[in-house]
Length: 114
Length: 110
Image (cartoon, rainbow over all chains, first blue to last red; front, side, top):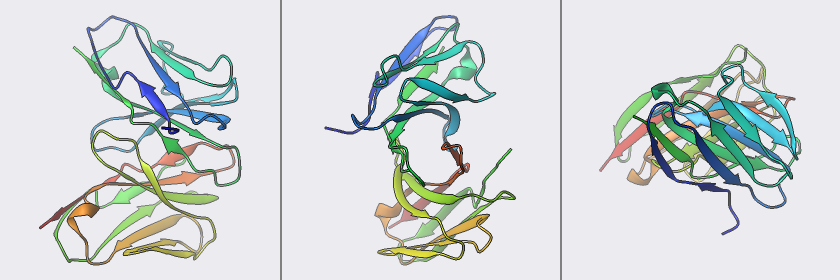
């Protein structure tokens, strides 16, 4: 399978715990995006990378969220001191840098904070 | 801040009916994309429109980009149960990121 892979698919955690999600993009894609989505709503932009550089972070992304893409390949999204409001589907997408680029999404990580 | 408003947010119809979903903004986008998402999966791209007034057809789906590139519509002819899902429009600008609308949940009943 050469699509975008996310791990884990589901994560249940207790409030206050830290969690980390991983995204493996399509191998030749140089852009990687993180989005957050709640049930029945559209994805909400969090941050994106071009190669290893983080080019933009949403103002919605609090200091408890951090993302990395150390070698320009896979990426991790960490949430520290989770809160119930962090419960959502976290989607990763990758693309090739070009005009009107096409995003390929992974299946997401469903986070439930109890 | 660029926003995309989709309407309706929820649509329940019988198989064989036609429907239109709208995506509106006060901002101009360089392109507009439509995605379809099934429960527990990521969105999958259906089409990209880039030119004002552009119309694209994908089998029973017809997509249109407004002349001013601020709005778009998706029309489905003779809906089938397999069309059930969440339809998302997303606007692209020069920064690269996509801004998504809140989605239209379509339920097609047999």
